[in-house]
Image (cartoon, rainbow, N blue to C red; front, side, top):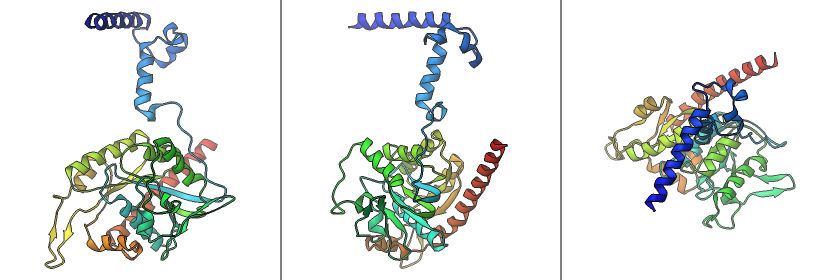
Length: 333
């Protein structure tokens, strides 16, 4: 067995020397058109470039085209909420952002892309199943702020029925929530992503016209480490990072009013500086929020810290819109 491995390694080494001899000592992209090694696919430099493109999708020549909106929809901004780490309150932050924007008069919707662990409908107290008609699915509106919501739980017979699907099916369902749901006229569509960097987040980043991502973390070192994976994924896929929300940063004692950092000292500012993304808010661990989520009344919760995020995100997206318009004008001219 060892002789076979040594023979194979020696053969590969010989092939490598042969390729190096066939390729020019110094290459530029312009040289490839007249290079025999590039023509017959044996150029080691082109092989290295192809490997890099597989690892770094942002460098690949053929980008995946964004899915178009339905003819029944006019959605101006799409914002995803992501953590990479489960259990940091990402879905509650998604719901709080949606309600905060709705209170400011914006038309808002929530797309629950967490197919295997959906919680958005329960937070909004939505129990009615989604209806469909010949042109697509109709989202179900929340009771208080009339926020349209689409989630896999609105299509199941019972909310605790499991979804046991493989990645490709989950990815297709997420796409259909964009293409087949009649969202109508919206200023903002918030997308609640599942934990991790797998199929659903990848599908959303590649297929939906995202304007940006809000990252959710907690003070724990373990959570921060995993959240950084999500940040790196977004940058690899050229998705704009709007900012960071540190959730469950502290708890206020109901008896003495003192602040207790139950998950350790806040790391929001340090993570913000290390990753070069703005710190949008630092939210407490609030039993009142947990109670309202369980009762389906998250729209009754209105923290000042989340309300202050609205203006910040709106200003960023307005600036991005102006840059896009200016870039479009220059290309037209």
